[in-house]
Length: 77
Image (cartoon, rainbow, N blue to C red; front, side, top):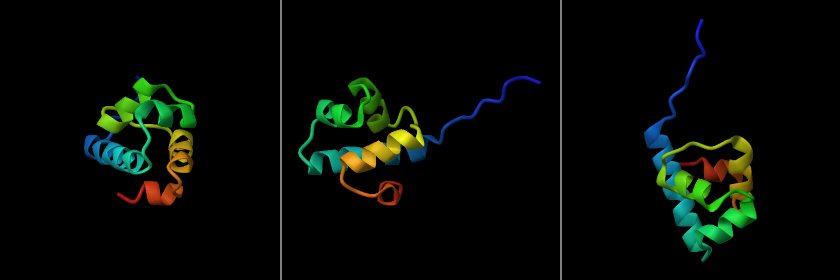
């Protein structure tokens, strides 16, 4: 058997990214500042915000903390 691959949900990723952008801008943060707080690269944050990649739960948890919301609020799309 071959390795099973999973496709990410493009609509979910796009909506998640839009929420990150909205929350980041409401806090007055630029991408570099938020990426630093979350300990990810600015290019990875950009990919998340554009909805071209999904992310891990641990990164989502750090994003929620940096954006001053709960993880459940972050996933309430």
